[in-house]
Image 1 (cartoon, rainbow, N blue to C red):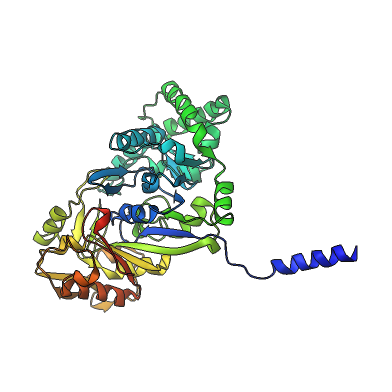
Image 2 (image 1 turned 30 degrees about the horizontal axis):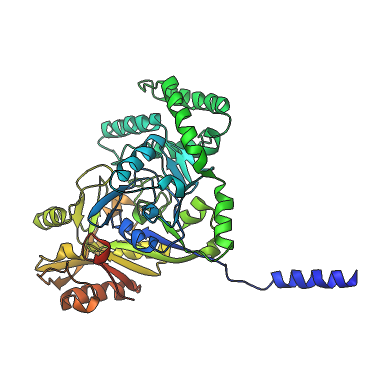
Length: 460
């Protein structure tokens, strides 16, 4: 007996010795207002990943990946689904619109995406919304999309206070989740009669709130019943799935963030934000990943700044410079097709994103778009009424009034599209990159000078 007690003590004592996690997740996050080129960075890292995850958002996100001159557009599916050796996982933080999921898969299959159903897993705790998102998501129903459009119309009528939503139903779906009357994937793939009852209650709630909302409940249910059969083989216990991946044999786990830091519901330019946490905390809550298992966090920064929709934009260039950035960068939203507003790189904003996320390194994208500019500026400080602001303001009324202090750089006025190493870049471009690193005190690990995988220059 004494021997057993001694072994038990030894076992307990060993638990008290701090141990490094077996596997850690590498995270890729947007550091501005989205559209930074996260999909390209994820695609690069996903080539040797074992698992690629999405942790939040829905089909309001849009990632473009170019492989062998073929352009793939992803909204719900993780960009890493192109890696045939990796498992793609959609976590509980994602809002899933089922018609959108299968339509997206079909369109990309026509371009060459094959076997995605065999390597896709979806958390049973994900919510259902207007668009099927592939991670720990909420499922979005078609009436969530309709409600989103009505709400945006009402906001527009109230002195033009629209938010610039994508009208994909993401906000109403997350609202249902927070109100605790939402429906999850586990509901859909279980007893359908119970799901039907809950669905009718939820639809009735929206019909009462919005009398002009037209919902064909029976048709919706019939469609969802068909989707349930296709979805069932993909569904897994997401918490257990991630726990095994993190604590089992050595695996490379990659997390693909959607949207970006300044669109985060808590840390973004509220209320002109999305409805989920796009910062690093969303990885833990959206996937069930303990903080100790979060490894390197890469921030994706466009070499200039863009924003879709309305909201404050301190470095916006509503002039010929902005038009040039927009046309050269082909700045149209992947999800909505809306023209993106363009301006100079804002390092006050990026530094704030780093404060929240703790970036290990930066991926600087679309440097080539600046190739023709004789002069380039970077925003480095804000003032209001002549007084410097010590930090990025929470109040959007303040942000709309800031004057930006700029650092001006000479342009390089030559093409960088064929460059494949840092040393080959023009000295002016190298100085531009080094200034960003020194200002943020974060190293730049990749520089993008084109659309293809090969155009991502690795610095270290």
